[in-house]
Each structure stands twice: as structure tokens, then as C-alpha cells.
Amino acid sequence: MRISVVAVGKPGALAPSIRDYEERAKRYWRLEVAEVPQARRGGAREVRAREAGSIRGRLKPDHVTVALTRAGRSLSSVALARWLERHTWGPARGVHFLIGGAFGLEAGLREECDLRLSLSPFTLPHDLARLVLAEQLYRAGTILRNEPYHKGAE
Image 1 (tube, one colour):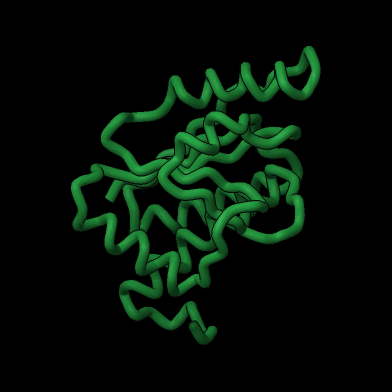
Image 2 (tube, helix red, strand yellow; image 1 turned 90 degrees about the horizontal axis):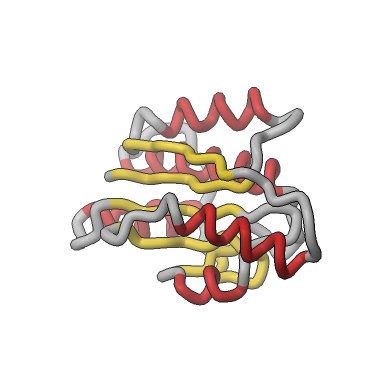
């Protein structure tokens, strides 16, 4: 299955850890990462609108889209793995995970997504959200292959 992460901005201090887990996740998924530029001028609304335009330019119509937002649905690691497994056999050719910038994702873009997913009820810096997502994609692969990495319960 194709999985793409479309993230606003480039990672900072967490870059080595992000890259490590993205490489690990590639053992299980056809993972690609697209970094769109962070808008720097204007108020929050204008910044989100420009970033949303850049994100939309990276989306493929035959992919399921997932907005990462603290107000989204919470899934356990096992539930995320099963969700990805179901989409492996569905009509979609892949899944896009969208990570906004400092002001988050534009409301219209969030609403257009097939799923709004919360990694935490906390507001996370986008670098940390990207790290958590990369680790969870790796973990999902190990869960689906029954490998020993995941030791947690449902």
C-alpha cells in the first residue's frame, strides 16, 4: 500500500529520529514524504490557506486522506494498523496523512478529509506529530506482520 505523509515545513532537531522511523516504516509500506513550504507572511487564516493550497497540490484523487488534528478521532496502535489493513484491500490506491504547520490545517481542508485523526489531545509541534506518526506507521507494520516490536495491549 502507498502511504504518503504531506507535511508543512522541514523537520528541525527531531529530523534524525523522524528519518529513522520513516526508513523503518518503509519496510512495510510504500512510504513517501512530501514537505511543502511553510507560509511565513500574513495572519493565521492566510497562512493556513496558502499552506492548504500547497498540500492540495500534492494529493492524489485515488487516495484516502487523513488530517492529523487534536480534535480528531483517537485510535489505538492496533486499531490504526487494522484501519490501514482494511484500506490495503479497498478501492483506494493509498493513504495521505496531512500534517499542518504552526497554525494547523485549514478548516476546509480538514473537512475534505476522509478521516480526522488525533495523535494526542495535546497540541503538538508539527515535528513531534511527524515523529509520532512515523513511529506509529512502523508499529502498524510490525503489528500486521505479528513481529515482536509492539508489546502493548489493544
